[in-house]
Structure formats: C-alpha cells, structure tokens
Amino acid sequence: NAGVMQNPRHLVRRRGQEARLRCSPMKGHSHVYWYRQLPEEGLKFMVYLQKENIIDESGMPKERFSAEFPKEGPSILRIQQVVRGDSAAYFCASSPNQGSTDTQYFGPGTRLTVL
Amino acid sequence: GQQLNQSPQSMFIQEGEDVSMNCTSSSIFNTWLWYKQDPGEGPVLLIALYKAGELTSNGRLTAQFGITRKDSFLNISASIPSDVGIYFCAGLATDSWGKFQFGAGTQVVVTP
Image 1 (cartoon, each protein chain N blue to C red):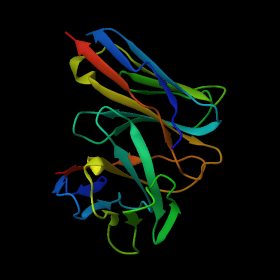
Image 2 (cartoon, rainbow over the protein chains, first blue to last red; image 1 turned 135 degrees about the horizontal axis):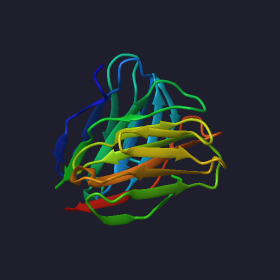
Image 3 (cartoon, each protein chain N blue to C red; image 1 turned 90 degrees about the vertical axis):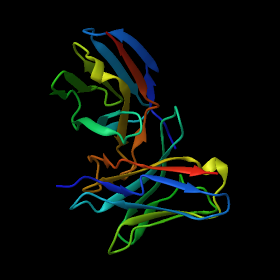
C-alpha cells in the first residue's frame, strides 16, 4: 500500500509566478489535509478537504491560496503570484475517515523556494 | 490554528539514556498521535492512541493517553543515535471534526 505521494519534492519559483503542489492520498483515504512548515517551526494547518468538498479552510490565507480535491486525481494546493514569504515546506496528509478517532499519514512534502 | 503545549522544546541526551516528552491541551481529546520528523522529510507516525489511559509501545517507544484526556506523553528508552529528530504530538478534540492540533515539537539530540 503506497503512502501519501507529493510532487514535486522541490519547487523553485520567481516572485509573481504560480506554484502548484500535488498530493495523492493513501489508497482508500478520502480526507486530505495541507500544512505549512517554516524552518525550525511546527506544522501549521491550512485546509482540510474531502473529495469535491472543502471542509475547513480556516488556516488558508484569504488571497492567492486555493485548494481542491477533485473527484478524480490528486489534491492541488495552488499559490498564485508567489512572494518570498511563501517559501516553506508544504505537507499533505491523508486519513481514512472523519470522526472522533482518526489517524493522519503524511507525505514527504514539497519544499517551495521563491526567488 | 490552535497549538498544543509540547515540552520540552529540546533535549540533549547521551546514548543509552531515556527520553520523556509530553503534550497538554485545554480541550478533551479523542485521539493522540505521536510523529517523528527527520530533516527534509515528512512526519512519520510512531504511535496512535484512542482511549483514555491507553498505554501503547512501538519498540523502544511508549506513549500514553492521559486519564484526563487532556494530555499524552512519549517515552524513548535506551536512546540510540538514530533517535535524533523532532518529535511532534497531534490531537483530535471531541468537537473538531477531523481537524488535528499539533504541538510545536521536541528536538532530540543524542550524543555518543
């Protein structure tokens, strides 16, 4: 059973460009989470999605950031008009179900560098 | 997002020593998870806890779900150099609908 897949592992963008980060959850998992991690810091929640549905996006910046998890294909975290402050590691996690008890499995992350 | 209180922030220990870290919350939790993160990698799940008082081991790692449901601890016995890394706790509150809270992490450094 393959784990959570993320690509690319490293992404370099110039200021003003768009960044697209992809996440394929573990087989059988229908819930996806995106987190951001700055160097020497912990994980900051961004967004929680089910297939075709955003459950909680309270951690997402209001502008330039969007996320989707379509019926087919991977979840996408999209950052438009990137700025240097967007440089960070972005992790995706997936879980099998929603409920009062659950488990999250993380992908290897995408390290975004904005020049 | 809301963060759990994880301590200590860092630990410098000698090989062979035991390590203990804990997380506390103001909310009642139904799930506690412990992860390890190596540099440049994603967090790897070590132990999952689902019941108050539950004590679970994974090799030299032992974690417990606090009886008050507001805390959890992780112990590493007889540390070895490959235990170096950052350990995170994560918890799921009763009314959180799948949204986990995370501790800031405990950096463990093991010296020979």
